[in-house]
Image (cartoon, rainbow, N blue to C red; front, top):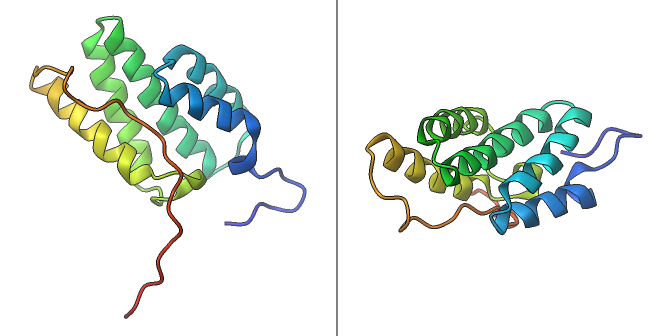
Length: 133
């Protein structure tokens, strides 16, 4: 989606790129601050997408601090917010993030070990392949 005239392009905002880098390095508190600042300034549909990512980051902060109930709740809420979003929303592969987060959520719900699960990450979305009907 093209940005509205006069409205900045969120996907190119250096603050978003910083928050994503912090997310990918497991700096949950720092990326929370970055995503939250952007969230306050953003309109839909990007606002909901940012909130979902933000909730997933905070879930991992809770997990690291031993608050598994809080981690479970926020992972579920984050996944719920991201479920209707396009896979390339904000220019990132949200399908990968949703898949990874769903594995964490399932492990938390079943009280399974989490250490063997890959850390969540936000990767740039691949260019869309044309669909042939």
